[in-house]
Image (cartoon, rainbow, N blue to C red; front, side, top):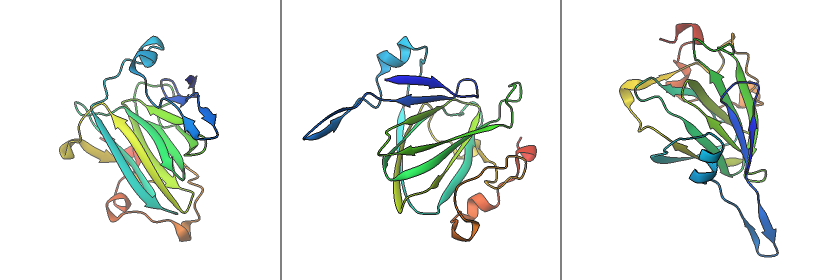
Length: 179
């Protein structure tokens, strides 16, 4: 497993070692011991999965403490643009975002620590996304940032006429409004 830093501290790209032959392939998507060896000591307690069609933009979502979540995101089918926004007030990269294409083909994962907002757009006809979290969902701790917040200037790689955003995500505030 290859673990790479991103320009934003603590946000990591994880690429598994894939073993392929005429039958198909095999890889470890998560190995607690290997993560710990690399300084990643997280106890994941829940797995989530979503299925979406082209043009869907989900996010930007987060939970506030004590239910803030670390997420390990990967794509089981299709391709997404995965986006994480640093919302740690004391961080030198506060308000900056990082995006990466995650796909069933490249098998990359994004480890998004607590203190980040997260979202993704679907770039393929459909996509199935799976992610581990280290805290349970708590409705009262749920917050978000509008996907098209002008201060973030995120290019979701989706034409605005083709974007599909939930009514819930359309009423989210901007980063400056986040409490």
